[in-house]
Image (cartoon, rainbow, N blue to C red):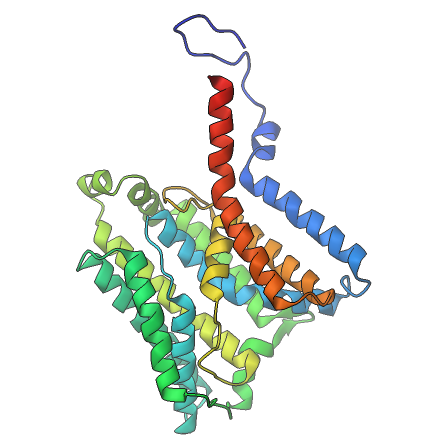
Length: 333
């Protein structure tokens, strides 16, 4: 490095492609995932069993389905904290339909429609009335969950058709469950959408500067409304899979998932302030959280410990980049 007074410091040579890849957040996450995998395999002799590893994927696939559109929403500068409550309301609607004799196809369509409707409701409040998304979705978090409690109380809906169980318990081939295959397909679809289309570039532009994006011809409100629709729809998909896997509906279903989903997104490298992030990072973060959860389960660690861990992880992921930037600024000074 050479520098003179009043001149910017210029490196003697550029970083190699390998150095740039190694310095990416996704590479660090991948290393963390491998370390957790090795630690779990050493901690429990049952971890490396193929069927146990397949069961481990159920710890994150349903949450990751929502994390993909949530990542786009946060990149655009918005957030949806009502996703877990949308799952509860969609599951309640599906359970109520079963009581009236609905078949598997009708149940699935009702779950997807309720999720889409909730997403549209959130999107309209944010894009049409100009309300802050965090305030709106905190309100609808209570609203949607409250409706589920009013309908069910302390009861539960059961009696789902046998064919409906395949969505949450079925396997496409060998140890590859339907949920895992769906997770992979959605990861590919959202990766292409965000990183390979004009819509994805519009999402990044809005997150970096919504005013500039608007003056450049991007329909900011329309893009954000679509993102809320996508988040609601994927919450409906997760409701179908989760209800199918559990075989019943209670108003407390998916309680606390919003924290884990946001943590998954932020851990994946998506800036909570918007404007940056990637789908591959979210995919790796999903595996990291799934491996940690499954490892704790094998070691009989209480669930409250996992909640504490998730909370600390969220705080740490948000705080560490800022602390690192301050340290770097002091070194430069």
